[in-house]
Amino acid sequence: MTHSSTPIVRPRNRDLLLIGARTPVPGTCKTRLGKRIGMTSAATLYCAFLVDLAARFTGCPGWERRSY
Image 1 (cartoon, rainbow, N blue to C red):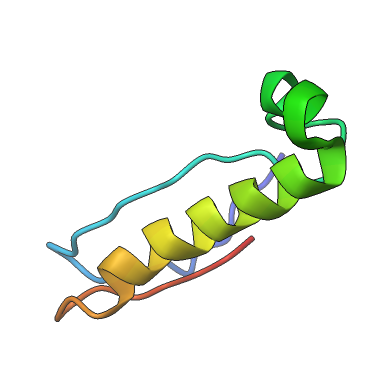
Image 2: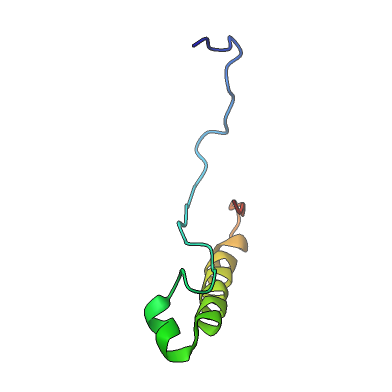
């Protein structure tokens, strides 16, 4: 394996928050809740939770939002 001689330049001293989450697909997330309210409704609610969580940090100065 060879490595490039060009260094990778990254910004220094940047704040980083990673949020790990499942893709909100019915039947794969919030399954216990889905048994009560339906898998589609549970996935929709979970998606809303993720959107709300991301919105809490996107308005903060110095923070950048990225979705993968």
